[in-house]
Length: 469
Length: 47
Image 1 (cartoon, each protein chain N blue to C red):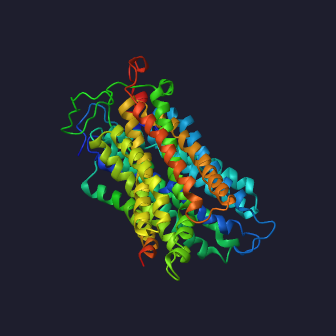
Image 2 (image 1 turned 90 degrees about the horizontal axis):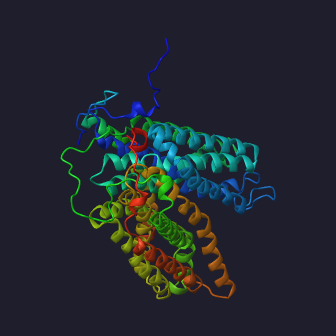
Image 3 (image 1 turned 90 degrees about the vertical axis):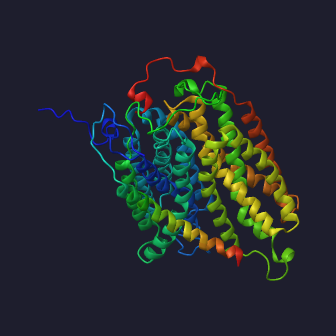
């Protein structure tokens, strides 16, 4: 007799029953984002992976992988994040979040395992394929997989819901970095720099951790609404009750305006992240602060850690605030306040105002994180919930673009200033003024956002699969 | 807040407050550990 019952990963098996508590969905989403957020801690492997032959991070062998070769791994992963999110977004809407999360877990965990073989064989191409290509696909699919589900479970506060999940991506690096350091120290006697076994353990641990999300996630039943929830009857042109198909969404100017906004916000944030450690050390050195009072490498690492915390907190705080403030005003704050603060950084650095400098950078990083976390709710407002995950996936190509071009731009600007003989804070002035001007572009894009024209609205019957129910 | 009963309920799954707490602990503990590690590192800035 044929078994017609749906498989465990089938969308039909993920429709919530009457007793399901929607507050189980954010931890399911966090399990995915906390895992894949490890990608932003990949730099912790750079020095050990650059000394696999020599065994000495300070004296690499000629056969050791160079920093340039190793930087490509993260670049591939971040490009694949955007591409896979864009390509698999509609598939995700069709098959549901559980199957997508499973695919993400297999790719992300499997990517680590393939990369460990690459490290063991000292084959950089295998590492590119494993962590970069396969793992990057896991990043993209995983990043978008819980977003539309969360928005459907929390129609009353979509910013809070997506903020919680995307906060996890920021927190993932905080877990991944000390975990990798501890594992490499543990395995350093059994393998060169302990990298290959660390990859194996991390791959398996993340795979298991993500399984919690896979089997906890549920989609709401068709027509479900939170008890007592009454959709706002207040007229707001920027919050639609219609839906736009992902293929139509990319034909609208609104999609591309949001693309520009995300790209500018991320590029500017990368400007701070890339320069944070050298900037604070070079600007607040013994020469400017007095003997023994300058910022050391350890203190600079603390500064970078503090920025990470504000990046994480900003994701939740700003995204939640956007439910009250509205998405467009929230992005006006990101860009308007951002322009002022970016322009202020060189002045604070020149005046050696360390406390103010740190505070300003923290606020900037909170808005960098906020920009990531608020965008899904902005998309929902403009395009409806029907395919918001797929539309979000396509928008993430802006992140890939910024993730590759941002560091190139920042390093080029900084190097060109140094070549002119500028040192300390002066060498970073152009970087920050350029980042402020990028935010002006983002601000203009946000000001141009209007309601999506009705001709793009979905006119057909919304099926369970297309609606994600 | 629980969903209202609907006509289509393929799986009967109930979730108590306890399972919600456990789920949050499952993700909250590693997150808290990561945040605490970062916070300890950040303390160097204030010494």
